Image 1 (tube, rainbow, N blue to C red):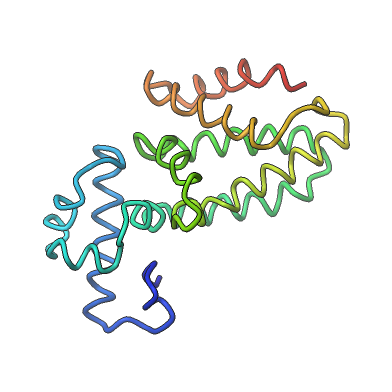
Image 2: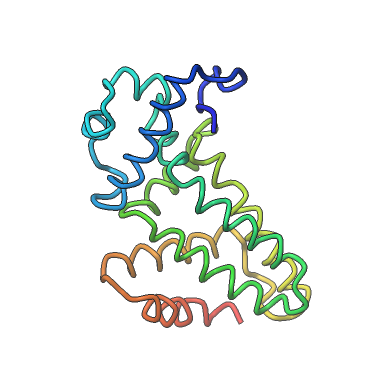
Length: 191
């Protein structure tokens, strides 16, 4: 992976690439332990680099979160490709909403960070999450066309609803089954 900076168009020196990779690895662990609002200076220290090195690679917290989510976003992209061609648009939307909610529980405070990133046009986190909102739009349109959901369901509203359920589920410490039940209750009104 390259950096989120303008330097991303040219390859990194070997030592810079090692620093980048180490920062992302440590950030993933730190975010999993303490959430996305953990100290970036602490991440730099744990990665064995100075704060300046971290900020050269990741000028904003959003960029570091986006990099840490890379593998999870790739899995969601593969799922999205399959669901967009599913024979059952209603079931595809249900599967997507559950996968999206699980993704949003990856790190504490992730739903808030993503919501905030959508207020900034050039946020790396917003840009990395754009495929999630695009997939939601496609799957909502397919489900509407199939008559599986109400015509007045808006993708943006559904994304916000799933984000809210993921946030609440995370705060309560729900199991996967608890999340699925809560999501079903919250989305029953879209049918």
